Structures are given as structure tokens and as C-alpha cells.
Length: 111
Image 1 (cartoon, one colour):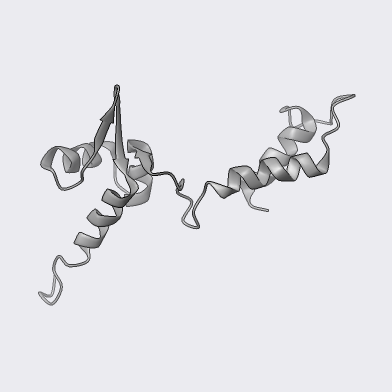
Image 2 (cartoon, one colour):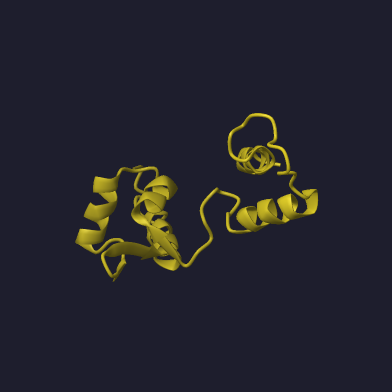
């Protein structure tokens, strides 16, 4: 069980306090495991959420860069994005394509 799963298990058992379980709040272990599995099912091995659309903070974590850099990449057209209402999202396939394009930059040039 990873750290997130362990923390969730403690929260479920203790009512979110991290202290001893509250009376009458015993959590069925089978239900607890289903909740943990449901959370873990949406996370890739690299810790990224496996959704089609990623938020700018998720893209920042994936690339290891700051928010300003991600927005600059979007503004320059190097990283494609979509806007849903007021939210800026990056399709997972576009992030993967951007990273793949980086692998070819500087190959064989000593850079």
C-alpha cells in the first residue's frame, strides 16, 4: 500500500482525525480496500492521473517545470491545449507528443 492509500485508510478508520477511531464508525475493511483501489486505479506508475485531460499543475509536475513555463509553451504553440469554460487543460496525448518531440532535439549534435 502506498502513502496515499495508507493515509486514506487511516482517515477512513479515524474519521479523518488521525486519532483513535470514533465510536460507531468502524469501516468495513472490504469497503476500505475498494475505496483505496478506486483511488489508485486513476494513477499511473509515474504518479500522474490517467485522465484524458490534465490540469496545468499536473503538467508542471509531469514536466518538472513551473507554471510560467507551461503557459509559455502553450502560448508558443509547442504544447497544445484546450479551454473548457475558464479551465486550461492539456490532452494527455498532446503532452506525450511534446515530450516525444524533445527526444529528437539535439540528437547527434553534442547538445
